[in-house]
Length: 443
Image 1 (cartoon, rainbow, N blue to C red):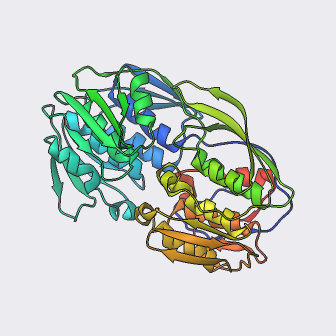
Image 2: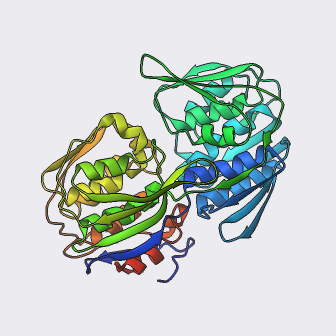
């Protein structure tokens, strides 16, 4: 399969073909990859990383950490070394399309004597940042905000900031992580009161020598706290597990394509990241975790086997929305191939992702003959034959692009997308992997 050029947008079309079969490895997890480079850049010593996702978003974080003053070196495919530094002075960083990268970096720089101007591509500049800068301001960080809470923004940080107790307005690992990273060098204790969200930052900080405590509360929230210190993190080795969000594309493709039997190796099964597989099982999907184990850094992984299944519509538990927020577009594709209607509620956060993913998902399905009801905070998708034949506008959103191409595998007339270049953001080997499984995709 030929490579898609990031500089020359090119339409791509997928078609119905025979059964999918074979074994692929999941690309490195995006969330862990961002954190490995970032925290390695803050640590004392040299952190080694294996299995890093070498997609566009992560490479933007690599460039940003270098500009802040840390040495980051690629030593082989997926293998990197990060030599930590004390960040100081001034820097201008362009985080490309990486929302996680910019939001966590804003928190990471907060405890240093440094001034950083943050910007990104057109998509990133349209996304809200005050959810991060508001708590940082409470800690004593000066924020220049001249674009209604959007990039470009300048952080004037300080080694003299105060720990705070901050209650997040929504379940958000990005908000929690930014506040905790700022709290590493703050005076006193920093505590985040949160609706439970992904705990990758806490796990990695503990692995790098800083104690993060999590306490369950009677109201269903959690207290997550650490004590500030001038001590730096301790360099370590981090194994990046396979990304469960990326693995979901091949898993859903296998579930909806008759006769398919596919295995995706080494997928992370963090309890805050595997909700999409619970939802697919609830729909009747034959999804099995095999060879479960724990890798360096403390994350649990497994090989996921998926076989074609007769799916049935369900009401997706809205309390799990934060645990599968990136997977709703591909879950909607599964729903399009299920009998009955699947209801997805409580997902308003999708409207401020790389695109308005609620509207974009509704459009990609509707234009290809699927019945969809769009609401302010969700979707209802009624399954049936997929006519196909449309060219989907992706809005430069990698998950919309890949979801549309998976839908094309079960369509009558194929499904096209207007541009595939951004898929490299999270899944550089997507076309190679889908081709290896037997998918029919013309680039």
